[in-house]
Length: 222
Picture 1: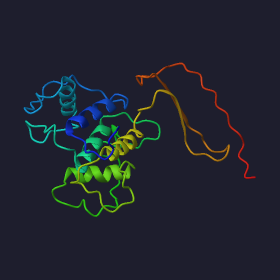
Picture 2: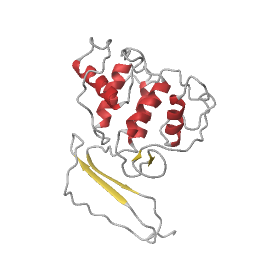
Picture 3: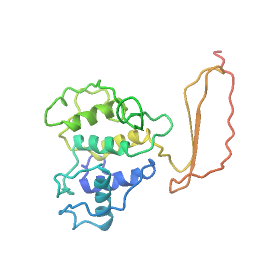
């Protein structure tokens, strides 16, 4: 069972995020103690994941000294987690990236567009969460792309968490095991075709030197 309608506790979200960052091309730290006083009862794997997220700024905790590992993740928190995860990831084929600031220099996975459909996020208490939600809507990450409400204070379900995580990873260099091939849209021989190929092990590590044969046919409307 996956329990798609269950909520997601913050300790579980820490594991999901750290496990996603490696395949997405990010680098996790050593997991040095970040000063959270309420996580000592969790497993070593969970404690490591929470500290690693704090090192990267993906999670800043509920307060400076508490992570609240057993609290459920709200939809606002989910947007913040994913938006920060994408900033620490490597852009993959077809992924959207913008300059970190200004019009020159380093780029990161995000959208600078400000349009959105939501009528319930223009609230003072949202602050950073509002920016993250708008960013993810424009990246096509939110699972409610045509809805007019985001419900930022509602706990996110395991189903919606999976949907948003998968759509976010589409912008990164994360690829499944085996051979994956992606191409831009094209309709004629005159179109410039870009094909991206990855070959990964079961641990999602790249395999170099794989030979790939590609073929094309001349499009005919009949």
